[in-house]
Image (cartoon, rainbow, N blue to C red; front, side, top):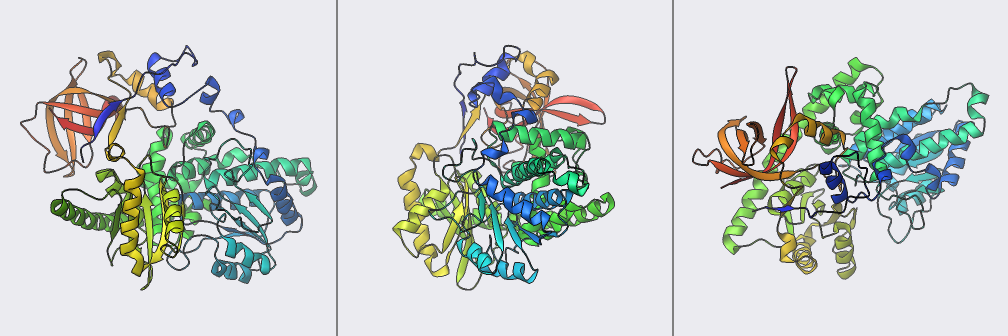
Length: 575
């Protein structure tokens, strides 16, 4: 697919602080920053916990559980957000005096997502008094009903969009509930868990709990390393509140004040603790945590995050790193098969459907979401990839593009074609579903037709948004450092990218797939190192090319104590 570079329009940035550089003011304004207050990344800038609907009921449940020393069970999801949510909840409750708290994560292959009646049976066998869901539960109507019937109190904490009917839980904390006045629906599951525990600490202080028990009230900020990891890994929008949460977590990690498990994950990912960025959480730590839930049992990942011993944490992180390598190999094979099929379809029909549906009988259901993501990036189409969960049923994971809300699309298909989809859930850009194997062909037809109806041909053309062309004196460590500190960057608050024409001085392959280049800006300035990852080997390297158009990010390369400017190339067009 040909991706075109589109420069962001100039925005009014007069409302932003004059002490910021013109470049930075324009970058912030183009990302929707409306006031200087949105740039405040201190803990004081965080929205107040009591703004969350249902908080008083939730605190009453938790106080009762503590005073009566009830058995509390945390039921999480099997991704990085669920793992960090589970670990944070267990650690915080233990720190506040809960002596009987444990966690349970459904194995995705045996039980699927969420609080199901089968999971409630396991919870009942543990003698659970209070069941708390984290990063799930808002759609678990039958699971919550089963827990209530078994005599448990139920507290649902979630961030996914609610359906028309809510579960009959004793309390629900979800910023996306109707009439929730919190101020941000973008919290990740771990963000919701953090807010709940922060409110609980304040509540217990007011109720004299810590004085009565002789327990030292924990510093809730100690858990922000987990919040940063889960928030970035779950790819939720980094609005002002989430940016403050992630920034504070990163500050703690860089200062070495993080969980041994996070330190160990940094080590196996070969990331320097003191200069960790949000993109490191998303591209290096998050995948190692997610790989456990994709291929094995997320209990291993949670054990790593809960671990207090660095030596043991390193052993667990090494296992996780091995699973991640296995995940990469499985994903690469599936991706190659998907590409081969689509290229054959393209050759036969001349164009691809507006919405892509992929399936092979031997695909791994824990990895289909990653394949959907890669194919979406290559062909710029909404993609749903399926794998078998049984002889009669398929599980799918989808990824979308701007302009098509994937969960809404699935809801429309479900209402238009009853019985087509067994169940579904998710967000605008990612969703999951199950359907009978016999319905796959019909689903493919209806999904593609719906995407074609909802999206214009222009929306199916990829564009790469640029913050403009850098001047010769902007190819500097000063600007690169400014941009690094100006984040955290991520979903809905993208890292600054620039474009321009460059003289291509040299080019060579690294690791057989990455193009290492030496380039010089047409506008003038120094010769620069540049690297483009996973290039098309049918096109590059090409010794005949002397000039290129690049879409890139300004980065800092640190090697043996030396720091230099490096361009991380996203788009590479020969001229």
